Image (tube, rainbow, N blue to C red; front, side, top):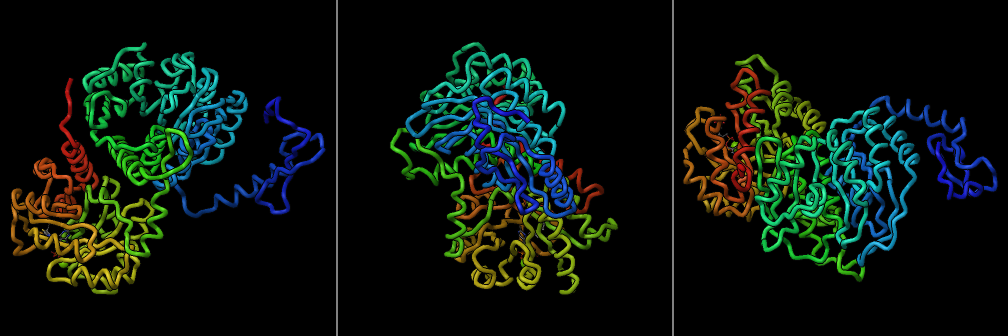
Length: 556
Ligand SMILES: Cc1ncc(COP(=O)(O)OP(=O)(O)O)c(N)n1
Ligand SMILES: Cc1ncsc1CCOP(=O)(O)O
Ligand SMILES: [Mg+2]
């Protein structure tokens, strides 16, 4: 164990506390310094063994970054952002900074050997999924990190090449550029420079347009990372905040509106941490980037009237959703409309045709990328339905995928599913809402703008609109066609998922109508009446990803 020479070792000592699971640092005049006594190490090991016996795993991000005393950026932002997206975040501190909403008043780097020790402590024990880097104050720290990652490989590495703070203060000198370019980038799954950082990495070139950003993304990609996101938040003369994502083949312009707010401190750290959290949860890269961007936009919006500090740059409230936990009891709901992206609806007839259990079918759809599952079991006896729903819930919960029950509010209640989907001849959404309470998800089938308006007024969370195309899965179902579907999307105040006759052959044409309320497609036969559900789900997802970019791909 390393001790910082400036640390007053005479006044602290590590002792094993009476409670076997904790180590407490107490003030003492002993000369045993900061070393963890052998007995304490053994105690820790015993607890570790006991703790590994079973239980719930959480997606785990390790942030390697600097501490920001104002808690708007750095380690503090990373921990809050990861938690907001459902990931655990451990932290290795590379520097302690004194900063506030005015600027950075001081930087105190942590000795490289102690960064190495922190890395070893976390990586050797905690089953980290994704490492995210922020402020790396020296080439030495970068080298230490690379060595640690070679010794303890993780699933993904997200590199935010932090150099300058939002206030314009230097956080890592130009000497770190070679460390990024020659060592770290080759190990990175994604690098997320802003315009200034991209320019610095490329020798100071000027970046003024989206086309410049594409060229910069390509040049940075040539340095080794698998993906590059150049953030254009500071692009001059633009009313939009366009980021360019490059995966080595395609460029995606990810557009968002530029929000006028004083509270933007830490948005870069937050974005990279959200990407890391999404990757840790299993999202593919582009989806992780999109979700991260959506989260940052929401956090910016929720924080625009926050008053913290007297300087020009205030922090975000990353945990704004906690306030809606209180609001939820008063009516607001927890529902992420992005979950409608690839909506899998089960069919027992198709499962028996292919000799599959409902459990295997649901599991395969999730493995292939389904983002929400609906059990539509028209023939099942109530008891069997509840049993199947309980089993499917186990799978869905372990993957963070919501599970809805079609038609049967009683079954949803019995198994505590995430919600229900009801049609125009099922229980009215208003009644379902009063029975299920404010936190459950409620979807309603709508074929007209008037029905969409009613669903909204009844307190639904989303609408399913179709059949967009003819289908044999649902008898006597009226087809609304792409035009009818688009009209409902335009009128709907709720997010919309398309349904009816959708397959990999036409999913692109649905998403390309590009109305903001359209969030995804719901499919039955295109997944469950196929030989390999995983393959079909993957195929559909990749079509959806390619066609649902807010703006067409930019090819340069
Ligand atoms: C997502 C989604 N949209 C529409 C439906 C159809 O529901 P409904 O109109 O009640 O018809 P049935 O599915 O119950 O036959 C759906 N299930 N899911
Ligand atoms: C349940 C439902 N509601 C409207 S169309 C439909 C069936 C969709 O099935 P498929 O995806 O096989 O066309
Ligand atoms: Mg129904």
